[in-house]
Image (cartoon, rainbow, N blue to C red; front, side, top):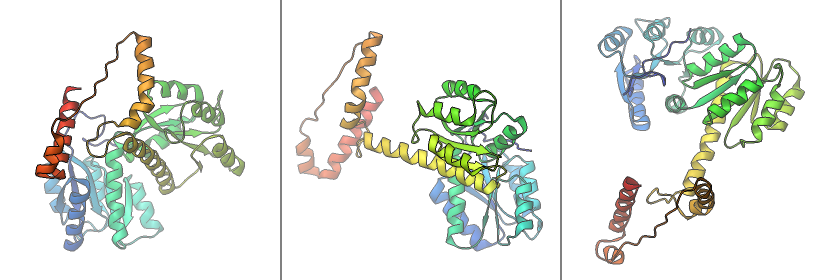
Amino acid sequence: MYHSSPCAPTSPSKGCNKILIVEDSKFFRSVLQRAVEVRTELTAVVASSMAEARQIVDREHEGFLLSLLDLNLPDAPQGEIVDYIQSRHIPAIVFTGKFDESVRESILAKNVIDYVIKVNQNSLDQVVGLISRFQKNRSVKVLVVEDSRSANEYVTRLLQTYGYIVLSAFDGQDALTTMKKNPDIAIVITDYNMPGMDGFELVSRLRESHSKDELAIIGLSGGGNPILSAKFLKIGANDFLNKPFLREEFYCRVNQNIEIIETFQNLKEFAMRDFLTGLYNRRFMIQSGTKMLELAKRQGHQVCAALMDLDYFKSINDTYGHDAGDLVIRNTAKRLEHFS
């Protein structure tokens, strides 16, 4: 069963900025700690054994965003550390040096976020990537559209385990209503065969108002008909999965699609803002100014525009150098944001 951590998005608890690392190898523990703290800005609390991990969790049981756990410790050779950490409602990522089908099944049965196989530098990158993804997911909304309650709950649990905020709908019309109430939904995962409005019609309706770089749509079907995949993609879905699917494939597809959406959003944001100050630029004014003016007219509001100049700015550059000039511009921008 899925348990939300004290740091779950719906929890009132704040300040979840720690990661528990339990690893008996001193070298790997040190490398993990440094990578986590440098690349995620989270505080790593380390333990070399299950006994030490118990002491840490008992002492500071709140504030852990998640944990990184070695599957085989000297005092917990059968993965007992994972069971213990899960019982304390701390999400877990497992890393293991041994991997086969039986190990995979035992790891997934413990309902961890994911697992990483210790191989090389890429393993470390995977761990840090999972942590970063889990951090971001706590503000990402996903809509699951599936008329089967059991299937809906299964997909919802998978997404919640990965930290996503999950909303559910049980038919197409219900999904459209939920979308209107939650315009910040980033991904829709929809089944094909539903009463009233099937998955194809839902995708078509959603694409009338949401482009592929604004909303990712993943189609699902258990029919085994390859034509369904083609039609889902042609009608506007970003991706497709046949049921039943492997958990690893499901997570990979979902994460890749949300990362594509985030990349598009970042590129749009970069294009609309000045690199030095972070303020909106001329491109933004041209693209959004007309719409803002029309909206203000319809609502009967007045519009004010101001043009500003920095007096004697050339003398600052000439006297103190362009780095100082850049600093003046950035501080001026901060003051303008404060009063906006």
